Every structure is written in structure tokens, then in C-alpha cells.
Image (cartoon, rainbow, N blue to C red):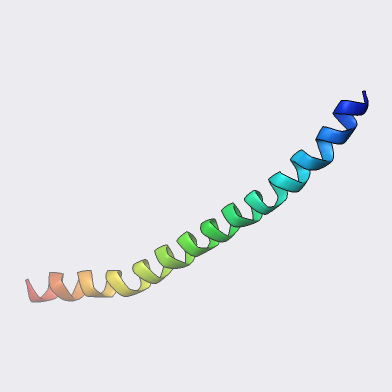
Length: 51
């Protein structure tokens, strides 16, 4: 029981930064995708009109 009690806080401490890093990566990817969609979609329409 003592071993489990000692191990659980360590695992939570290790998990917390990893989840925050994953969340940051997820947010960055979402912002990049939104920027791509905002920038690329009009360019696609321009090329369609020109073509």
C-alpha cells in the first residue's frame, strides 16, 4: 500500500506536464489549421476563377 501511495503522486506529476504539452500542441495545430483554411480557401477560389 505504501508503494502505491508513493507511486501515484509521481505518476500524476509526470502526467500533468505531458498533458499540458499535448494540449499546447493541439491548440497550435488547431490555430495552424484555422490559419491555413482562412488563407488557402480564398486562394483556391481565386485560382478557380482564374482557371
